[in-house]
Image (cartoon, rainbow, N blue to C red):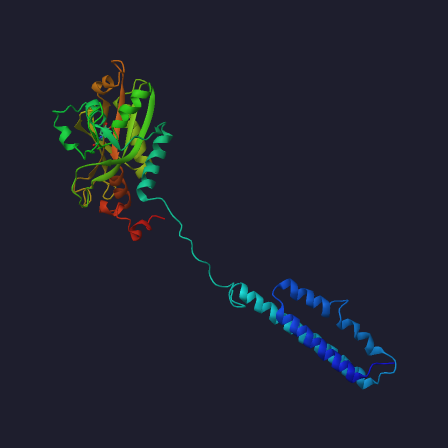
Length: 351
Ligand code: DAH
């Protein structure tokens, strides 16, 4: 006995309505999936009707009609399941289809080293290859380390040019506290704690009571060098500095040593670099002199060794250079203030 086609029609309509209602109440993807399996799965409700298509005694046009109904049922329910899934996704986050995978990503700002840091690194790496090792010292110093131990007694005229900002804290037994005016005090700290031979570098920030203009600032950086022991003489000092200058400015670099005065060295010299812009002919940068003043140096004064308790006859050499000045020469920068203003338009020019 075959079920009349009209009653089958009715039954399918009811089933679809029932499925649609359940679907509308589904709150989670798992519920939707369970419903899909129940109606459209391999052993689901709908598949139970397909055998009826081949049932004996059903007229051909009825079979066609039933086939159409079953397919329509399947399509309709699949469509509704799809829509319900999208709607749930939309509630979970953003509208459906809201992701555009072709959009470019958010750029991440990549940091880089400051040109002064990079110049210090470059200076250090050349001296490292000559056997020097870097050490760092404190930016706050006492008068003893900043002046006295470096052979700058209170009445000494140099004391004035190195004089500096004092800190409002109780003085120590080594005198009042101030910001260091050079990296040279670290020579004393290091020698107090070590015995020769050694070759060190002291990179760091220093301070001066200078009014700010294109070539002066109340803060800047220095790299100090100190080599003690091993029968060192002025020729060693020259050799080391010439090798450094060639590494820093290219194989053509030339230095000249001009007698000078520093309290902590004797003899003392200033080293000038043959102008890298005009190759010594004279130009605006070197003030028509053909030479650029680049560092101070000399053989360590015996009074300095005495201050740290080294025996008489100890020998060594020292040098000190301003990092900003070297960076300005290397990169053709005309204003020292650019290094401290943090203007990205300037800083981003150093890739
Ligand atoms: N400390 C000196 C300054 O700030 C630079 C200097 C010159 C350092 C000669 C030295 C040196 O070690 O030997 O101007």
